[in-house]
Image (tube, rainbow, N blue to C red):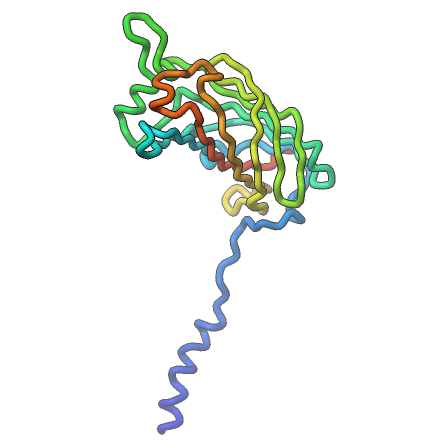
Length: 209
């Protein structure tokens, strides 16, 4: 009887040991990337931004619903091309007042402090890619507030696999960059609100062809 009682905990533990952890659909394995044209998954593509406020702390915002394409061949990553459109009018922050300020019209018909009530979409179009293992420097032209300037994205491959819901081959990347907003004609309150804007980008692309 004593032996049976001692064995019971082991018998109950066997099913727990046998169960394997669920496998993530996407993994950081470049061998899973296939050549083709990919389109953004707008619901899971975010462009975060942050600026310093009076030198005390940073505040943050997000652009979502970005659309665009990626042409990618893992055998020749330096030939990749990316084209992304960002709906600035959908900018959001954690503060309704701040979001309203970003999109409000200028006083008495003057220039808006930031984007104004009907801003044009921003657009990034790559001009060159220099890839190394799982990272790349993507140089391109960013058009924002009607001004086009070159920007370099420090990019890292973050995962590839099949989306478990729609079964589409998917690749993901994370990228960062720093731009000066005054170069794009948005100079309100510089330097009290920093001229440097840090961009933190998370993008998912689903294969379309």
